[in-house]
Image (cartoon, rainbow, N blue to C red; front, side, top):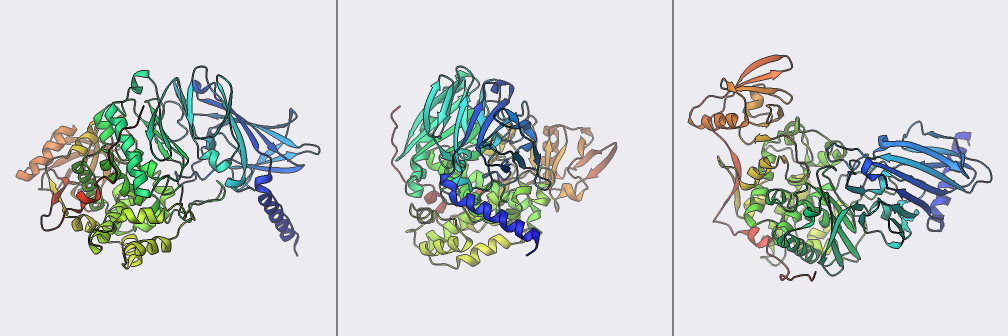
Length: 637
């Protein structure tokens, strides 16, 4: 046997021995000093059991829920290793920069790692590391942890504690051991998987609201100002209804307790992520008081809550990684995210966040997006799931041609079609609600495969589900997937009137309904008509191939300067597009670097915005789909 083979075998045997003892391993102690949170600097002190030789530690790379290798390694601003106060030598792995190899001398049984993490301040961009402000802190533990990758995440024990700024309150789903001082909190021993899956929010201003449920559900809100904690009673009631309706959808909770965490403010990034016993949601300071912000974000929190069942309790094969260095394979994300996207719209109505008409407006936007996302003709939805790690960080530019994470709305429309088939074939006796209760039942928690999904659908309602799913997943048709809408008694139409949702999205500067991103700039989404998404300074954010703007040579990165000879503004552009329905011309002057060119658009249909129109020849299944499953009750507060 060659020396390299012997060395490899020895390494594998060592790793296997560590894995085998998993639960018997002494816990890693993590002490997080967050007293400098207002400056964004977090001091993490970790103590690892060690034996003489080389200790390999890892910084989390693949982050669950983010579906990508997004561990913010570059925000480590200081890292040292010591034993008994004596510095130890270490080096970074040549091939995997997330791995650190520490030389442990004879006689050493513990290694201390001191890691300083710098939260990004004053920026935006849907990033977990923009996590601190003068008044608030969000701790996602993967930001401040190292761990031995030789142990599975669920068998790697940790004891964590945190020291907070004076007077700050906190919320987390971690089990409390005790509070050793007013600002120091010690938590019970948990596996690394649970630690990373249990964010902590802290702030000067923090308030909790009981939400009821069969297991305890609690809403914890932190805010930059005490005034933001005064949540309208009807909004709290919507969250109570969300808990009751979602529990009914899945046949009860799978968690023992749940913390719905909301951080209100504009100094930390707006962000959201699902966890098994909590969800972390960051909204603008007016996120629960401004009806426009609440309306255009109505599905976000239900979406993350649903993930407690779909994605956390039961995970698709490929997303059930053993350590945070294992690549995530997102081929089944159309269930993890797509089914969740579909149900979250339903829950928004059943909970009272949305009316039935507002759900229809949302579905019309989704269906129309599939029309102008001409990238659907060269890459399938299945390809976008495999490439999720790339698309999740892709910019607005070229989104129609490239596609982005539109597997959310497209697979949501696919699940609507599946629901319609089940309801029609069973004469209304069965629905996708039955699939959810079966597929995520208390006795079934094993990671699932494509075949598991098809078989469970077949148990609910016999059909060739494998072919149905593959047809949607592999399609390269330019036609949008409208079968579910049409079978539900509705059809996609366009008028020159903006829907309420589109108007509010533009007013609050929110380009996409799903993502919690509020831009500092305004925009007009004219992709339904001339194929262009335009920023208020004239910058072309997106241009859809096959539509008139693109055909005239206007592409992302250019900047519109004139409209029919007048200085550019969004109202002037919209008026000119409206005028094309009455034979008006549409001549756009665009800057491309130092050059400026005139572009004549061959377009004559005026402004176009998507809506759903009732088809009276078919039953209104959407109305039946959103019917509440529980009686309205009030939670004692």
